[in-house]
Length: 196
Image 1 (cartoon, rainbow, N blue to C red):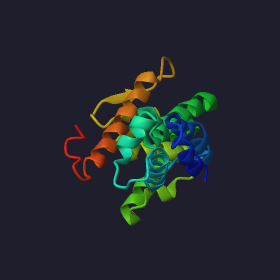
Image 2 (image 1 turned 180 degrees about the vertical axis):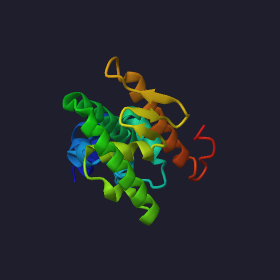
Image 3 (image 1 turned 90 degrees about the vertical axis):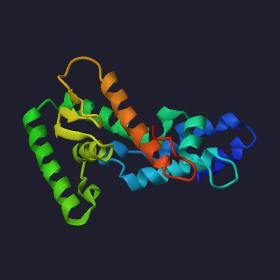
């Protein structure tokens, strides 16, 4: 409902589409870090964002609309993955008991891959932020080896020691999601070459 109001408002003032970032997005995704956002949910949020910033004509590229009107960092796919990873490291820093985190990680990992094998819906096993982080990483093409050691989509290994900035890691997560988003956009009409 809120995105419809924003769409009406942006017809008179183009910058009003930015209200999606401060109004519609937070309302639609409240608590997302607790259970994560499955790929189908992210597709719906991206469609909502694209509809909010587009005109009345149909057939426009959702990725292009979102990136031009809201910016790459405000693409729901990018924002969801970065927020999930950021929340994961906040929780690790707050919790401090790595033994319990590791035990829960391996349980979540086994459940995820078992569900993927049995019925193809691994997101159905997500029951909290730990499993949501794991599922998010797998969805963007990463291999979460351990709770603090991950292999990215290019084969690079990221290991968090508890010191230093998360900025390079978050940039790599953004890059992985952006690559995935543009690869999907390239499959649509006249989209050849967008994935590069």
